[in-house]
Amino acid sequence: MKSKSAFTLAEVLITLGIIGIIAAMTLPSVVNKYQERVTVTKVKKFYSLINQALLMAIKDHGYVDEWDFIENDNEAENGEDPLSSLRSNNLFNYFKPYLKISKDCGNESGCIGSGVYKRLDGGNQVNYDSDKRYYKVILSDGSYMWMRRDVYTPNSPCKGTDGGYTTSCGTIWLDVNGKNPPNTIGKDTFSFIILKNTIGPHKMDDCKAGSEGWGCASYILTNGDMKYLQK
Image: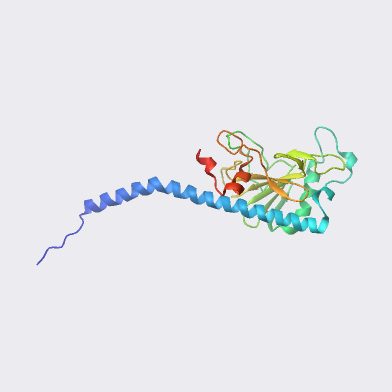
């Protein structure tokens, strides 16, 4: 009878060990690449969705600078503005009919990741969850969205300076993965600026290591990747 060759137990264990080492070395890269694609896809999808909502609101109510953001204009005060949340509410109400919302928190907590959000450079930003100046919702796809309209000029609702624009009507934030970490501008959280007839990404040139990361939505929409995180 002819003898049949086979792997010994030691050879099998050594082979499995090598496979395990290779998997341990490559898996983080695969996971990070997958997460990057998910984030890029969600940012692009949201950008399209929110602009569609704006176009429908404009069709029904005119351009954004014609909207009523606030009642009783003469109540606005210098410095700390007690009507900031009211304006945010009124601004969001124009978008609300055209968005699919699973939970509406208004100015209250419960629709934003708790705790202070971070910037790309590691610095602290704001505890958006507890701040009543922001109108907060959870969208049907599980992402978090909040909106603020806090620059007030009587009879000129789109004269704010924000995000590289001088005609800002308000600001929108998107957290693509909800309450999950890292809750960081430029990683899972992105900013967009409401203009009178469109919504544009925050366009500051700071989407790079050591910077705050506000312009990362613009980077993603332009380049279709998040290579700035690898630098």
